[in-house]
Image (cartoon, rainbow, N blue to C red; front, top):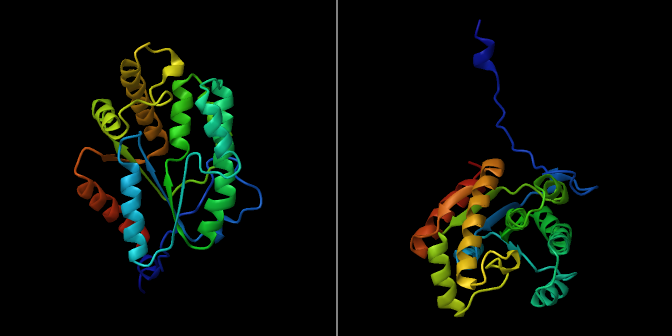
Length: 243
């Protein structure tokens, strides 16, 4: 008699979609056939360039794409931009503003696109929002509950670039530093350059902390653009192939 173990049919494991927390009521996760891919990293890490190249590659190989990111909600993005210009928002108000922006996009863009089978590319996700808030003293447990509506992505890539390189890239692109990206609201230093270095160093440390919790992939962002993109394409190809 043949062994029952040898005759057993092995059904390939299918990863189950899930929300990080309480989620959004009425969403059938089994209907979300698309893929959610997140590219994280500080300003100057090359996120936008990499996403633009990934969109071109994906659409060139027959995959429909949708892009989302911070401050892109039609509900509050304009108001959030205006409020930030005054540099007067409290940390809680700023956090809730961004959470509203994210909630609107996940409900009205991300979930419908995934249901339609699109590849959704997110130019940052809840990890940047949580890191910013944690650096500003917000409670991590409160933030996890706030972003319990977030869908767990299929892949998250964090472009790791040290602060010394970030500041050079930022000056080369804008000839100035951003108030919020320099952490000037934290009172780290009166000098914006010094504040930027301290803030981005702390942000990088916080991202490493989040990586241990959420398990996203850290990608070396110091390589040439094409080399980094080839690495991302290889990893995404394996994801789309179900490997």
